[in-house]
Length: 202
Length: 332
Image 1: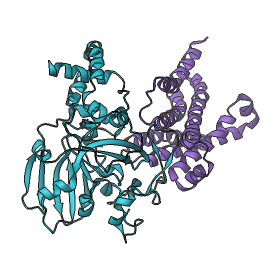
Image 2: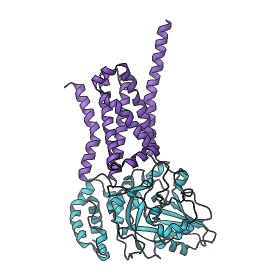
Image 3: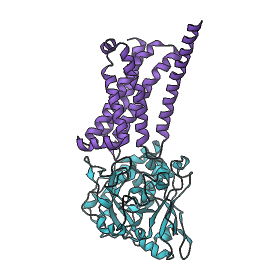
Image 4: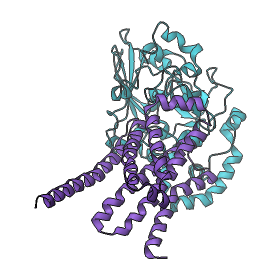
């Protein structure tokens, strides 16, 4: 195994720690007095963390000039999707136990649920088209499609923001993280355009 | 010796899981004796005390040293009798008490910093004699009762809790408010040295709650000083807290230092923070949703399926007349 492969597997292992902890705490009965809420919080927070990590790959790659980092993007993205699925399943199975009417009502009437569902639905096509075959088949359109991840990150933070009662420190931090990450991209895109313009005029 | 075994016992209780006795099944006398468990716990303590010292749990253990039994507690006809109680562990480890942090386990972790003796309660406003009471002399005139109540949190979970306390009405009669007093306002301690959560401006501190005078005089409304037959744990609002079982939990203010009688509706903390989401009344009402989530159902902690939320948290027969003629959609 190359050093990078070890590094990547290390990241996968670290990202699976919250899921393993949930399994362990289920067995030891340490999921707090409200296990369903606890599982919902843990899976949701981890999904958001990994989603934001996915968005840090490209800036990190530019700053460090280490191109192999790009291979972490899909890994992190799929891990984020894995937790988003767990988060969603918690809601469907543990919270509502397949009570479809109540879930539909929730999605329609509760803006934070609407945002959560939107985020999940945005992530589905991204996960589905994450294979090498799909990347090849979609060509240029793959890039365009996968820009949806920016929308998903924003809706995820809004989802978090709207579920909080009063202590907005965490969602605020995530919003700030997104601003920084988007800021990088905006700055580079402006620079690139300026560079291209200069080339054209010279 | 007595105290030593007592504190060992307390350490042991911390280290071991929640005691597995079924409170609803033991006779009241057995509750205060619990000798066998005491002996078992003392045995476990010899091992446990060492572990506690090593794990740095001693401060918490010392804070919980106040886990003393409350003597002469009467049963009450206002208790619900047909529901399973939540465990002591549930009730004392899953708390909304933002003065100690906003996570559910923060209060249990941080509330050992709260010093509940000496403690004074300032009574002021529209009252015959404004005065400052020492907590023990404030409680002393009132015989203690056990009130087993449902508690419904605005976040749509609920518990069943065996509070120990006395009717607020008895306190009010003793304090003699003026006829012009229409509301009663309570204030929580505001000391960042003891309450680390106060350093974060989550709410406009200190925490303030209030009731209309007829709500305060209602026989279901109590001031609580204990639960499960013992002195109230800090994270549950020691040394004295309000319990209003037909309202969302946040109305039941904790660690009270001030009682004020007034002719104005008090500016209550959650109402000030977000008037659209938290009304002054905040009666449990399955037909009026929180703007962001439904209040139609709740999860009783310890149960898997949600259950339907009951109007006035199931206390409608007793309290509905307080609100007759009021539009509860408007006065949520």
